[in-house]
Length: 251
Image (cartoon, rainbow, N blue to C red; front, side, top):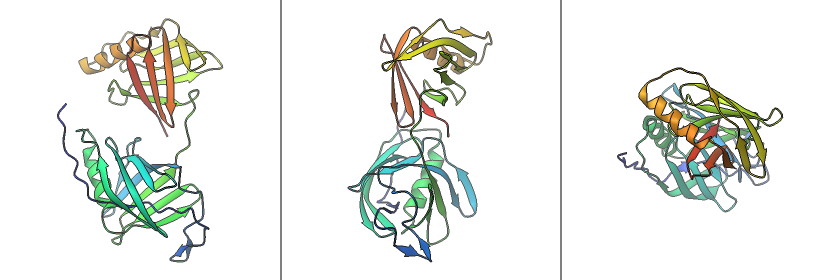
């Protein structure tokens, strides 16, 4: 895959609202709500010139107590160091990966909005809104860690156009979902960071080549016993042969 450079200036971004909850802007208590440090904030949508753009499920950011920030613009990851000043934060020299992805247009919109001068933050409950001087805004929601069971995990690698997904039911001892083209079902026993799978039953549809390629790759991973690891809302499955599949939790 060709790579495309994503050029980003230093960002003015998310406020660190961890102080006493007494800072105010426009009469609102900016410090109200959860401490933003250590929290993963999912981007809900971005409104620019009165047009709202829904964010992909991977777009997020997280600020540590020392101001170190990491996140994802939608496909490409980014990191920065933050200088904190009340309800405003200035990020120094954001660094981003350079993958060419399907959602680069959203990434460009996200990056442009974040770099459009100083953003003003408003916090309410588990929601944050970042607003530019021109009224453009980024809306974010606190994102809780996902559990393996009961979560719909959308497969991101192998690429599946969003169709492949898995749902684990630890009470019933099963996994079900879609492998990219066909629906699947199998017994699944979860224990000590491993999932032991029975024979996977599938429907018999034939789809376009790319979906069938995804399906075959995913079924190779689900053949036998796999190790699993959850990083907040990202699931990684690794087969005994070293084949890997990754998935993200749907909101």
